[in-house]
Amino acid sequence: WGDEGKGKLVDILSQEYDVCARVAGGSNAGHTIVVNNTKYKFHLLPSGMLNPHATCVIGNGVVVHLPSFLNEIDSLFEDAEQRILLSDRAHLVFDFHQHVDGRLEARLGRNKLGTTKKGIGPAYASKAQRNGLRVGDLQDWPYFESRFRSLCQHHVRAHAGLEIDVEQQLAFYKSIADRVGKMTTDTIPYINHAFETNKRILVEGANATMLDIDFGTYPFVTSSNPSVGSVLTGLGVSPTKLRGIYGTVKAYCTRVGEGPFPTELDVQDEASPGYHMKTIGAEYGTTTGRGRRCGWLDIPQMKYSSQINGFTCLNLTKLDVLTGLDTIYVGKAYRDGDGNILEHMPANLRTLEGVTVEYEALPGWKEDISTVKTFEDLPPQAQAYVLRVQELIGVPIRWIGVGPNRLDVIDRGEGWDLNHS
Image (cartoon, rainbow, N blue to C red):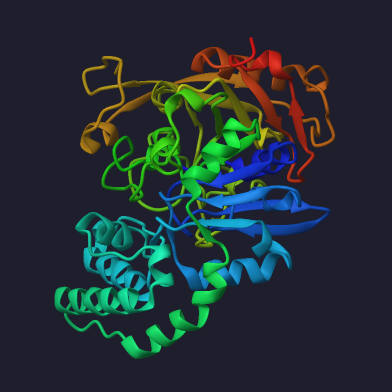
């Protein structure tokens, strides 16, 4: 369900890549990276921005709230604009999309979805309804102005009581058109030419497979496809260009927002492992600040995600958070009301909410692992946990996170990547 700590791996990998790209979602994503005790929080920009030699691409599948985008640039780096390419086909998120997002969520009451209220869903709705505006439209002002006025009228008619200061908004977008224009390009020929000239390209996912609008716990999902398919549709590349596909998963499970959570634990009871995970793991959303729900690692979820994405290896993060627990459980299988093991991830939420989880218990460890640099130097119980998770999922675990800093990661090497084996 996201918040897995993928930003750190992207940061580590991006030091060796020429191009880093985002392909789906918007500023509802949140990645936190700690460098020399300084926290960098990314929402729309690829975490690869921390590599001063990388070009960062915002692909056509992303939806962009330009005020937030420019604020993020200004808050992070002085030279950022020289290294960012913004797809002219990427759709725009407007302030009124965010207002509509909040109003729709409030209207649901107890049945709320847990949206970040960043306007992502309404912006994708405008895209699907074919009345949205794209980044490139800003360079044709008469066209942009006409389309913007029509889009505002559509939303005001559709949402009683919604007020939009159209003239103020137009003045703002006219004032930033030149600045945005310098970053805007057709990223499709750019990315394909980069591939053809042997540039190394890293695509950074956002959200998670269980939040995918097609494959996730619908309707408690995001509004895009944060699975491997979005790399193709959100960047404009063919399937034959994909090489390594890296999945990121915590050593335990978390979720922000609403929806079923089969392995969930109590995070309020100080004696609960869930409380341990939330406090030691600092489980609060980068984008929303909301406390995350916590639970044991869910193997059926991971096998389902691996089936969809075809991972060549995994990045297991925050193993250090489990330090101190006497016993660690892994959710190994789901059983239905009749006690039968479910062989597939159920699409029906009532079925998923009603499953009984079959757990496997593994011994914990007490040793501090935050300075460990090799797999062999981990406590035997920690090694056993990693190897058992790897066995149950059926995908090699290459990277293991053992602390919050960017270098607190064990890399077992390319031999632990199916792409190279």
